[in-house]
Image (cartoon, rainbow, N blue to C red; front, side):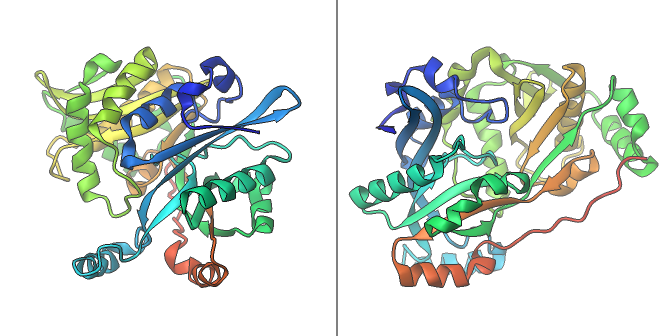
Length: 364
């Protein structure tokens, strides 16, 4: 195993040679964008795991400050904000993550036999050197748990994260997709499409919207978010436009030349990934900007002959209405102090509550 303090120390072809299609947010270029932007003023460590002289696995570690009231709802978060006026560090802790300071709902470790034990050992070593007392390895979907449940043997406890939405793409045209929906959902889409009026939905690359404009729209979304692990900065979007280049796809709602809302997409193999969205300052818009962006994303997945559309986390009802299905996600947490670890473990259902979504019968 080798540790690096910057992704720039590792050849891109070596790193990306280990990345499979199911890890679209573990590529060298995306990690460069996060690291170079210094999102959340994070510190980074990058690990390569070897079998003899051959690299077989990789992981990204980052350390930044999080609030333990993250998942506790607006009422408790308001109470915590009041307490922080007197005690600024209340429920705020510095955590060493296996993962990026960017919530894309996927893990940043490629799991191979023997890797988890080495990963934990290296995290403990870094934490000792850096004075960090909390560890988190994030995020894993329910079907991935058999590969990572051994983390509990290394002293971690499992907690719930927020669910991940995705859908299979099985239609040849958008009209065929509409025809597969139950009447009430199809009617809702047609009504939203009619509300566009003179607004155009534009699909293209990075030229569709500037990094600065997208950051402004992204800030509107984050201002309304009840669960916010981190806040991406403008520098991240500037780097993302450069690093992803032609790989970055954008769908946008445009009024004349003014971008009202936009979504960022990245394709990996036969999967289209909905990465981030930026929206108007007002939640309710006469043109149904958010819903029309969702429909445009579905249409892009169909046009590009994708088999899967990953829709990410949050905004569940809107994504369920277009056919998205939820899968539970989990994280693994550990405190260096045994008594504090026992306390947090006993509170895991409060600190990391399970959000169970009811399935919507969208299709005929």
